[in-house]
Image (tube, rainbow, N blue to C red):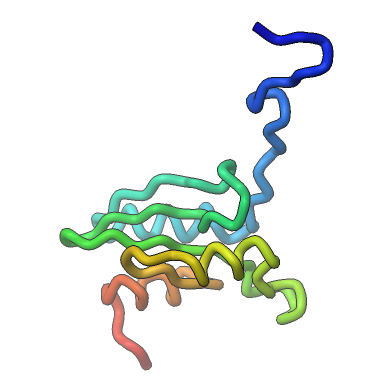
Length: 109
């Protein structure tokens, strides 16, 4: 039960800030056969996408490659989260191509 002084977490949820290229990245990954789940609404430095491909799980932080490098920096929460992560691959991507490279779908050129 909520009181006047307590607000439940659902009411505090912010609208997730999703980079403009995220949808194109998700579509390309799915077209390549990956399963993709958005985690953008989780916040607190958690990467934007949970991706499964060929029995591997990868977390992707999406940055907009069209923005200046200073606008693509990881936030303090993201730096902290990435530093504490002890699981599988977590990568920062800024384009469809970089996301496909992380999964080994296309090779480095």
